[in-house]
Amino acid sequence: MRIKTNIKNQIFVLFYVFSLFSMHSDNLGSYWGLNGTPFIFFRFILIIALMLIAVIINKSDTAFIEKIVPPSALIITVFVVYDYFVSHISGSHFLYRVWWIAYIIVTLMVVFFTDTLFSKEDYPDFYRRFWRSFTPLYLFVFAICFLRMPGEEYSLNTELGNGTFLMLKALIHNSRVSFEAPLMFFGNIIIFTPLPFILSAISNKFTPSLIMIIGFLTPFAVESYQLVFKCGQVDIDDIVLNFGGFIIAFVFYLIIYKQKNYSQYFH
Image 1 (cartoon, rainbow, N blue to C red):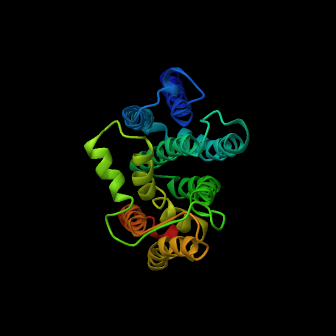
Image 2: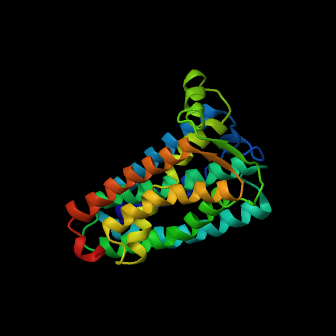
Image 3: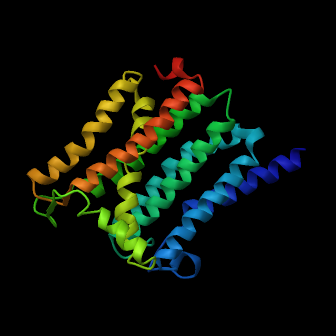
């Protein structure tokens, strides 16, 4: 029985490391250098499938998962920051590097949500440690995506459906469209999904009502910053997608808060 448990743990580590270091790089070859939009979705599907399998086969030993995931999230954040500013292994420019971060975020969130289904005894502690270890990566991503320098690549769209939603239309009409299209569209949804979990893990002062208010105001605050300083892409479509991503995550947060019966821990 011990041998079987070790094998399951090793499979999790193998799949987990592979998923964390999946890239879409023009500086690499083989699996990591396949540069087409279809390969982006293939990687996401593969990562989701591998991590589901890895967690499910270890469902009787969630303590193992909960022990290694939080510190590894901090370690991979160090790799991401170093690569973004120095090594550029994940790609020669911004979009490639952000795609790598997207794979990492999906990997970590699949582990979290799947583990949530099976974890019982120490889940509240894992919840806190996981999202607090996730926070440095999230803050870094938030900064590089939204905190632009004044006057940097400024554009303005106030007509709903005439901005980022066009990226989705382009993707639907041509699955091989530039990989910037799915990054812009789905990235604006994903970027706000960790927010309710991070806020609740940081402090018990963040009640569900307060989290909802923050989630509603933050997209407007981001776009207002870019509007005032005339930097980035000020787009009403982005606000809708940001808020949509937050709402999806907030629903899952409420399920954990109420259905999983951990309300005493959260608040």
